[in-house]
Amino acid sequence: MIIMTDKKKIMLVDDEPDIIFGLRIGLEDNGFKVDAFNDPRLALSNFKPGSYDILLLDIRMPKMDGFEFYVKMREIDDKVKVYFITASEMYYYEDLTKEALTRVGVKRVIRKPISVDDLIKEIKAEPD
Image: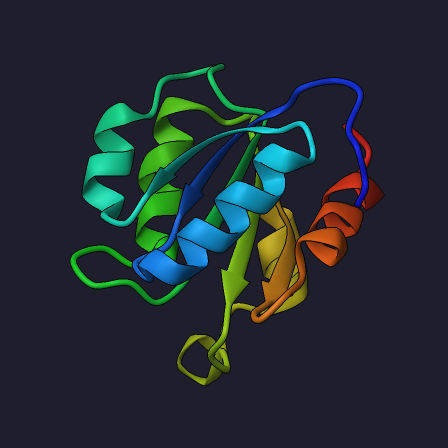
């Protein structure tokens, strides 16, 4: 277990309840404050500028995909750190290269499944 000394606030958005449950518990056990949402539209309506240090966004979700959420969220807060998390191949987003994602502020695309320890290592690998 990796213990965080400064409590960072994370918004986790994923349409799979079991993913939300596991990641939320693991992140909270490691010192993060987590707000988790299964509905990206509800998450967006609760998103306020400056209220989160990190967003963890699933890419494929019904009602609004992670990229659509990202674009709308950036209109509200252009400083929060964003990580996409996905279990699927990005074949339907072929034009979104790593360079393009970095240009718009996305540092990482994290593949699911991922252990909480590995997720925390990914988060800590990026400077604030």
